[in-house]
Every structure is written in C-alpha cells, then in structure tokens.
Length: 173
Image 1 (cartoon, rainbow, N blue to C red):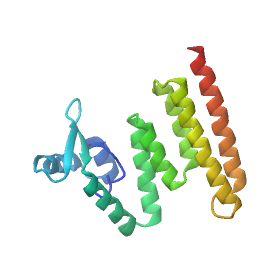
Image 2: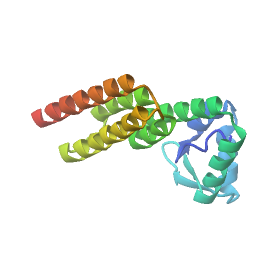
Image 3: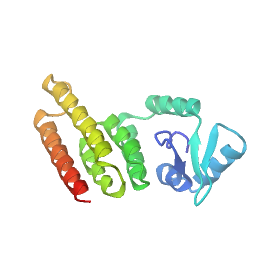
C-alpha cells in the first residue's frame, strides 16, 4: 500500500485501495495513523484523508524509483494523476503527468478548469507556465533529447487554443 500510494500528496482510503488493489488499504492507513507511524489525518469527514510525513514520502518515492520498473512506475504515476484529477487536485495531477512526460494527459487535465473557480489572472498564469514547460520540452526535442518536435508543436498549439478559449469563456461571466 505504501509504495503504491507514494505519488499521492494526500489520499483517501478509496484512492489507496484503487492504486494498491488491496481491499484493506483504508484499514492499513488508519492503523498507521492511530499508531503515529508517520501518517497524518488531514480530514476526517466525509471520508478520512491521510498524508504521509514528508520524510516517509521521500523515502517511499526513492524506493519506488529503485524497485519499480520504468513502465510500472509511469503507469502508477498516471493512475495517481487520474485519481488526483477526479478528486479536483488538478495542480498535483499535472505535476505527476509532467514528470512522466504525458503531454496528452496534461492537455486533458486542463479541462478540469471548468470545475475549478479560478480567476482569469490565475488561470492565465497557470496555462502560461504549462505552455512554457512544453516549449522547454520542445527545445530539448530539437536537440534530440525528447519527444518528436511535431508532436510537441501540436501540443503547444492545443494548449494555446485551450488557453484562449478558457479565457474567452471566463471573461463572459
């Protein structure tokens, strides 16, 4: 349970169960919390939300990097990002997707803006950062160190269109 949930900054029992495949994941987290084993309870209602102590999380992330294969680790990060997005934790989901280089997932995740009440300034700042990150990846690709140039150029164009559309929709309100 611990290693499989390390990519989540906070988690519910359901999220832990989904990632680990263990039906008793919630009971394990509750036990760790009750016994002060580096697990904090961030929220009790309507469903408990747990968070690992930063030292434990850092250790677990290091172990995941060492013991899981690249494909398994990437799949775990993507699944964690999907759960974070479903929970409305868009920024955390994007951070994980960025770490995997899943630009398609990041573009999809930006659709989550419709569910988050952000001001136009904050939304513009966030999307600008994402576009700059993609441009940096594009520069790396031109040097032969990343995804295909054409694929990244398409992603940047899509993000820019999303940015324009979202700002236009937001200013209508």
